[in-house]
Image (cartoon, rainbow, N blue to C red; front, side, top):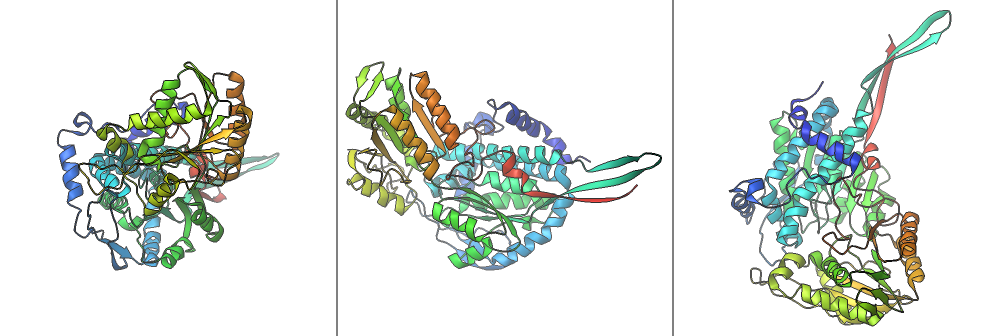
Length: 555
């Protein structure tokens, strides 16, 4: 039987299903923070809702509360003063398991319908969530609204659509009839039950607290699993708002809100005990290689979906739009101060230079011109504030300082500290460009998270392609780019991308950038190199989150 919420939101689901099959442009939720899309009062109400969280306790009414967490800070220098409940992880797991049978009893139709209602509710809170994302992660306002709100919701919807499609391949029942010649046929009635694997833990990251968590959250929920959200300790508010909204929707529909909970721990040992809990059967994680590998090695009871660090590269061979290429790269390297898992780090240029529509450019000229393009792009304070945002962590600041002082190679463009009028205490740095030879791989061959990029001098284009393929296969990457007017070079890059299993962007000079990923069309990660063992989103991302338990009897 269908479910009222599935019927209500059927057009939303059908739109997502159609688009993951055609891979064209479609967005379920308006990405513009316009009153025309969200209502005249939405911006003011969203800001007021955010400000109402400040300097007080964030109540969730969860079981097993043992204390409060109040360590959240803002890269913009604004005091937040929010206290969040700390709950005993065992109590959350027990409550989640108790809520699971009723969630399973809803069936795929009911679960998907409730998930769609949650996404619609979250979309109406996009302004509130955007302020929360901005002030905790350091994203600029427009990115915080788009990536933190509608784009994250699109990714969540994408996971729900894949979950629905995979579950819909399993019939609820079947009549099995085997002929026996002269004897009566063997007839069996068979039933197939879709059962969630168990508790899912979704570990949030400090830079994209909704975009990187909604896929796993909604993939786990739609396939029948309770979820415990474990946010980064410095970036809690977006996850807390999300959890409170989900719990409200569950309660309104007669379901146990403890199906979804927020988990903050007071020490690392307690968190690790949660991840290794025998009833936790899936873990979604975005972050460092070291901890990601720990999860894979030590949480054998769970399926771990991990997006880790990598070295994203671009080969610059030639271009027929030199100015457009430089503008595109300047935006790419500046966006959110390079704090994106898709930002390019190694820009590999032949030692003999490149051919362009403006004539031949030497390696040194390419370095100089890219540095100039970044300086020009960020010369207006309003542009810099909108694009750069603020630096999220102390470790990234230290890394920028090291690179800017020559600790990673010859500095082509030194970082500058900028001051925002609205946020005078914000920690803001412009990008660093470092020039080095391909043989000097000590620094560029490992992820240098933040606005740090290397202009790597290779012997020639063939050597450049060989280098980026090797980097990707050894260290992983989510993105690869190439600029060339030579189809043989482009074909070689395509072949390399297949072998290294990495998404390739070719000759981007306009309004699309290598570090951007569009829901329903772009696969974020392939799961085929060390940067990620899963993709947002494909069938593999959802299909192993549920099991099919059958029963049969003679008809």
